[in-house]
Length: 137
Image (cartoon, rainbow, N blue to C red):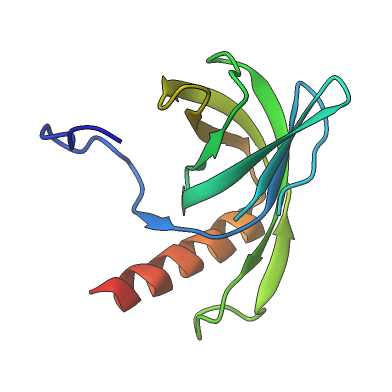
């Protein structure tokens, strides 16, 4: 994916790798589940969710979605952290495309920032991130 970023990390939230299928629908409702399906005007595009934080997700897709596009996202997250009361949850935030980096010939890495996310979902994600970050050490 090119050279590593050497500057200061400006992220507000800790980010960990994630493996969840996802469906993304631009300016409307969607469904999210490692493979990502992006639905735009009735067409499905395959992709892969690569990481998650309390603030958003990153994914790889062949779809060139413009920055600032508003989306509805739905994904299933399995969390075996003892911090969580539940082991899995379907999460349905509204998100904004914050960046779109062209990778290979037809691939794009998209960064999505959650704009509307319930407090319960945010806590579930925070527990997941905390638990997964501790495993990596």
